[in-house]
View 1 (spheres, rainbow, N blue to C red):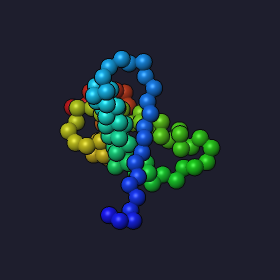
View 2: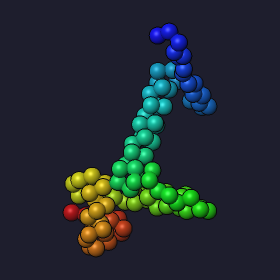
View 3: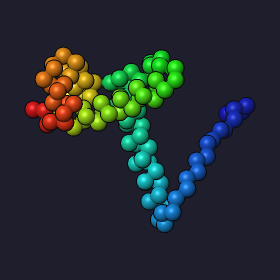
View 4: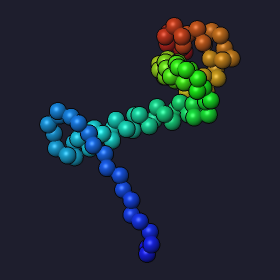
Length: 106
């Protein structure tokens, strides 16, 4: 349309991988799919975007703890979302102990 600017972005990647452009693009999309999926889980299950921790290393420390928690919760065999598993761990001390110890919860 008249008067609108077409804006785009460029991304640059450094790699020693010798593959074609299509295969390299697949690797990049896969990486960002995983990365975006983790951020989505952290925001939905832990409300990370709403965190107001700003002082010192608080944000980085809490972010690390959230990522460890997601990793431990994903290892359990209980059905349900990470958010549901997190709530269950808050309500059930035995389940929480299984999650923290890395025992496969039933």
